Length: 271
Image (cartoon, rainbow, N blue to C red; front, side, top):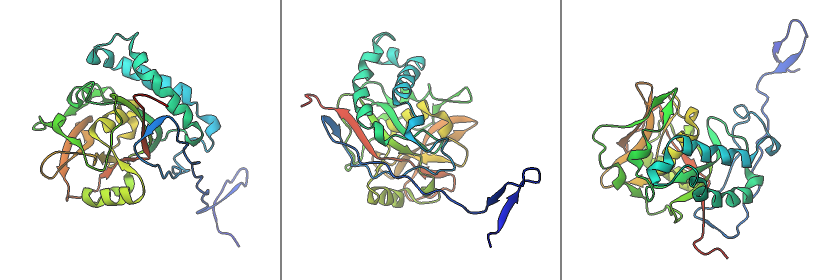
């Protein structure tokens, strides 16, 4: 006999406790003329957090256009030295890469999003792109004493596509790595066939999806390192997004480690 967790007194509708929907895996990503810097091993997001379970409800073209416009609204054209009118010509070539991955894209949730457009420090420094981030209209900032933020470089296992712009696919803020030492989280992420995020990628993530940065659900950016044991991280301080750092062997209950499935950028000479 099933144990009913809830019975609606008016409709007598019953619900079972503990029923879970099966996860729906992404189909494999096709490889073509785009430069892929990681092979994705992608799992579906938690069904309870997802507003829909089919790709039919997600419009990749609309989302791509939204992210481009978001950069424009945040003043990126001026930071790069382009007019708002010319800025889309910098980003539009990446749309074909998004289309090529369309079958693998699920609607975004707070914990996991299908893709993020990334602009690297080759075009604009990370220290400059943090203030335009916001949380409930409050601007982001770089913590005091982090003056060398733009001297942090990708770790050896991470290859960034050339050209200054690319697409980061299947981005997860890494809640399962809360209270896990960053050094151990990195081992887990790479063992799963995923890649940690850089500082630029983390900033792009919260620029496009500010609600993904939540109290007790913040995240480290394990793919950017400098000398020493500092690991960059994004969290909330005084109700504002903050880019700071923590020690690589210190776990925090409120700090996970974000990861992605792959990075895709256009080749210099596509074939």
